[in-house]
Length: 235
Length: 264
Ligand SMILES: Nc1ncnc2c1ncn2[C@@H]1O[C@H](COP(=O)(O)OP(=O)(O)O)[C@@H](O)[C@H]1O
Ligand SMILES: [Mg+2]
Image 1 (tube, rainbow over the protein chains, first blue to last red):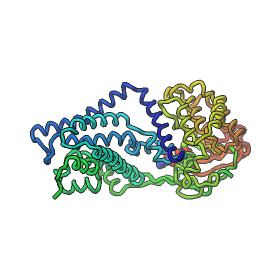
Image 2 (image 1 turned 30 degrees about the horizontal axis):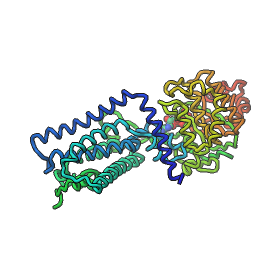
Image 3 (image 1 turned 90 degrees about the horizontal axis):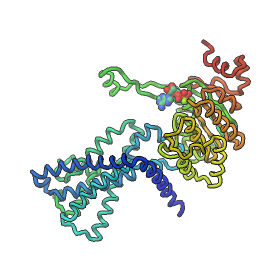
Image 4 (image 1 turned 180 degrees about the vertical axis):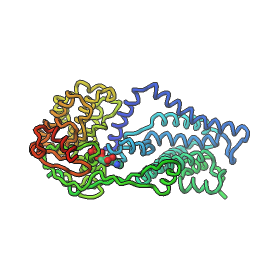
């Protein structure tokens, strides 16, 4: 039993140290969170402006699109809180930190996950995700029953794990292909941009990309379809 | 026998950059690679408790050897056995028993006092509390860590940081410690403290040491034996005294200088 919990206590010791580190730069931390929030909100404002003229995108109105976006931001918040070490893996290798982990008698993956956490991005994205969720949740016609809340929680957990797995895949490949950063940026970040819109508006190959290659559709699109009872792609 | 190295080699393959846009395109299609033989067919053994000076000019292959012994790098050829284990195969078992100090790097948390890193190491290596506090006390005595233990690492002088990094590497009582240029850039006082520490730990705990430095006084004051390496090959392996005799010099420094510039 003790052995089972040991990795968690290992993780929390790192969390304590990371928090202590961040608290030394309080103003810096605060500004960083604001900056992330503003940067990400700009994209949302763009969608808002487009919808002033078009009314909907692929049959999804503004509230529904905000709900779609909220899942991206909420999952990203947990993702970088827990797994930013996997995202920044190539930096960790380049600055020699990876060697340090290799020299310690612990799982390298556990060390990378424990010793890295992007609190600023987590707070910035998390706040935006929450705002979008609160704006949209009551006007999309979803009955927030216990079952649906549970489904939402599972959606978030699943979304976090899917994206973490994508990152992990790229991290592993960086051992064989030295520079994978640009590949990751290209595939992950562009796919993530697509995921802000309903899958049905895209041509077939992008739909396939989001379903089978970088499976972002399972992070937000399919779960949102369930909550919104959207029939698109059904035929 | 704690370290056995047989016919060990490491060859790095690096891509050569070619000039101009044409060159950039060429290296994209058919990259020109160059082989660097960092370590070439070296063999030696080190007994339990021995302190060995590992010397040679810049680029000789010292760090590469240390990295292979500590399990960070995979050898290109040859065999390594450390405490009965193959470093790159039994990573976790192997690193429980070794400590490594790289003078150019630090394993301390930059924004926190050293005690936080030490506490983390206690957890990582599962060091029993009594052993941990006993060691800290002993290390404090020689390295004077108390003076700066509440300051953040980024505020420490190079000498203070290095003393802390060395303490960190010995905290879990490893049977072997690799020290790769731990005295680089330090003043005489800091160097002396480090030498004293290394000597004392080697005496009291019988820790096996492989010590890399460019300061021959470091070696004379701490090591019984030296291994001299240049261009990836071992030039000498034996005691300091017979080294001096071999090169016909009374002064160790001069003997080393002679060895690396001789032949010309
Ligand atoms: N990662 C690497 N990639 C390519 N060449 C390397 C690498 N590490 C070391 N070398 C080369 O191997 C040789 C030996 O380096 P090193 O072991 O660091 O020497 P020393 O520690 O004795 O100064 C040098 O020529 C160096 O440029
Ligand atoms: Mg070196």
